[in-house]
Length: 130
Image (cartoon, rainbow, N blue to C red; front, top):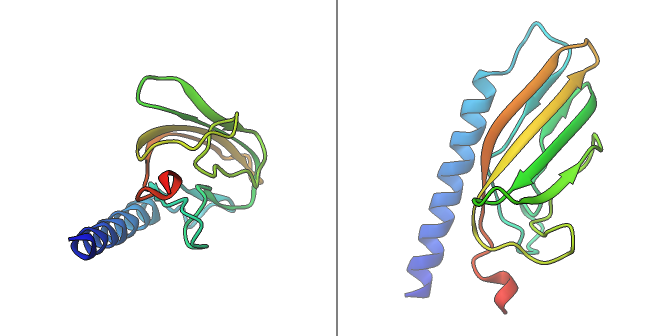
């Protein structure tokens, strides 16, 4: 039963990841110097694959993003251009699997402003309960 569950989770992650990049890639502005893509799934389970949530940026000079749980509570926040969320709260507690909301504001080297309100799906597959 575990094999089926793991295979189903892997297929779901691949479909969601492909969907995230195909949707975001459509918004990619070829006339702009700066661009940003926001993935919508990550798996912080210490397997060195997709362990952090980080916007994919190109020529971004300012970046702020915040992560909220489904109750609207702030879980994580950063203003570092290379900042990332590792699936833990600011106090270091691991977050549970589920949907989290991301609010992102950024400025490109060309002055272009980015404002995104989106979601990110966190899958640990029980990693923190081991």
